[in-house]
Image (cartoon, rainbow, N blue to C red; front, side, top):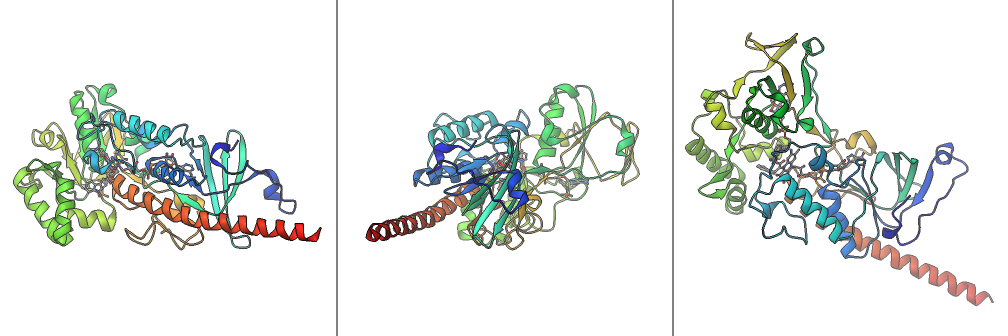
Length: 428
Ligand SMILES: Cc1cc2nc3c(=O)[nH]c(=O)nc-3n(C[C@H](O)[C@H](O)[C@H](O)COP(=O)(O)OP(=O)(O)OC[C@H]3O[C@@H](n4cnc5c(N)ncnc54)[C@H](O)[C@@H]3O)c2cc1C
Ligand SMILES: NC(=O)C1=CN([C@@H]2O[C@H](COP(=O)(O)OP(=O)(O)OC[C@H]3O[C@@H](n4cnc5c(N)ncnc54)[C@H](OP(=O)(O)O)[C@@H]3O)[C@@H](O)[C@H]2O)C=CC1
Ligand SMILES: O=C(O)C(=O)Cc1c[nH]c2ccccc12
């Protein structure tokens, strides 16, 4: 059941007589951390631990690594940030990868990353709850899989379930009357099946923009709902990636000034977007990313289609009717399908029984760079709102910290076993 190759000792199945709950489950002691999630964050921590000889297990609800990338993204997806900001620690992208790798290249990279570090997660195993047992000073992690229910007992728990663990599906009045096809962007693969269709794309983040662009490229007619405001930035400024430029500028200037500089360039390169229905938020793009986690849109072609009218920008939704939608400005638009590009959320509050370290939104309360370490052996990786580069930084800190305390505790245990052994010998 357990991946014994990554455990120092074979899994010990113990039954605890007094507790009914314990009796129903198999109970496995893990001599090292339990990592929840086999996305880039979980893999990066695993790699760091492997390098330092610390045993661990990774529990993953899906049937593969990086399930967000493999199962919940559209075909045309490419990394938005240049490759040097997306690689995981100690294993660079192959030289022949382009500046912005495709999602297939990125998945291939992650597969070889797992292989290189010999990381073998336990798939199809969903963590249902994790609770710190004060009496024993241990974490109790309960999972469910096709093999039944298991409880893992460990000293360290690494939360790597991601900022995008669950889709956000808002409720809309009348949607049950609509009658057409409704899907979330995480299930959208390509515009192929939408040819000739009128599609309402709800949301104008990177997903909404790119789904709308993809629909245009497949001769569908998207209307994109922009209910509030959005920052759209060019992906490159003066031949340099906007993200890289922002990182460089942040070394010299305060965030508000970097925001101002980015917005000046955006205005010069993209023009006034207000006349197309894309109002900018009053807070700057980096400030908004930091405070609310709202990622600016990096334009890869949707703006051109908005300017040409191929993507129609429409205001917020009032309600749906059969075959149509009424907007807040009173307009009624006939549509065949709806794609909800309404974003994602963390699922940590649904399973982690703890409320000191994580907020109600399932994000560490302490801001970057201090949000990776909680109390009692609890860690978080990949919740920095800084994409893959933030996840890599977390992973390095977490693996290092756990290795340090694992080594200390293992040395301590070895010492006390040796002492016990000596006492036993002296009795003879
Ligand atoms: C469409 C899209 C494009 C993106 N593009 C970029 C980009 O170009 N650059 C960038 O830096 N970032 C990008 N991101 C951000 C993205 O969050 C990161 O790229 C990256 O996937 C984060 O890795 P992670 O391991 O933290 O989370 P995830 O990749 O989400 O992995 C978390 C894993 O945990 C598993 N899991 C969740 N709950 C449980 C549970 N209860 N039990 C067991 N397993 C569980 C999930 O199945 C998943 O496999 C993008 C996000 C999206 C949605
Ligand atoms: N190539 C890449 O690198 C890509 C990266 N990504 C990343 O994935 C993450 C998620 O992006 P995304 O999926 O776009 O989600 P976001 O959270 O960025 O955007 C959600 C959008 O849905 C809108 N929305 C939510 N609820 C409603 C509602 N009830 N009515 C109308 N509109 C609504 C929001 O509007 P409001 O702002 O008003 O709340 C917002 O425009 C981001 O970090 C993004 O950068 C996504 C796609 C491609
Ligand atoms: O695409 C994402 O979700 C990312 O987190 C990448 C990202 C992190 N910080 C940013 C700032 C501007 C644009 C993209 C990102």
